[in-house]
Length: 155
Image (cartoon, rainbow, N blue to C red; front, top):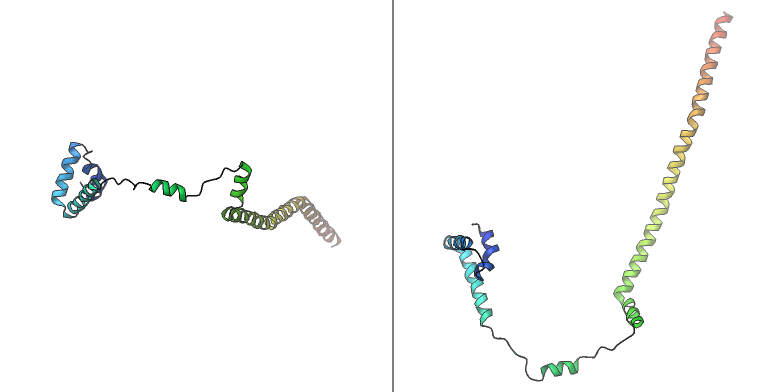
């Protein structure tokens, strides 16, 4: 058994809630490891101290004094409770931060959306102009061939 395994099983061992095999392994480890043996002694001493501590009853009249000095919670309507919750500084700051965050996202979204539309428009324009470019190139090739034939005939 390792020290880490013993630390995991130590509370169950002190409560005598481990199996016989684990109990013998723990005893063997405690016999060989001084650090774990000291830890087990300290834990057993703490448990014994807590068991010796007596349950203390409150002095007479203490509960009555506490109740007398504690302000009573008044019954309010559901609307008053809701508005009381909404108007707390923590809630107001949360709402303000949410509104601010949404405004910031909206300001960042508009330019990004504009760039997407512009890129899309450029792509569509290039795509639509491809047949025109190829038609112009074909016409230039025809003119070049015609000029070459006319030049050969003139000689």
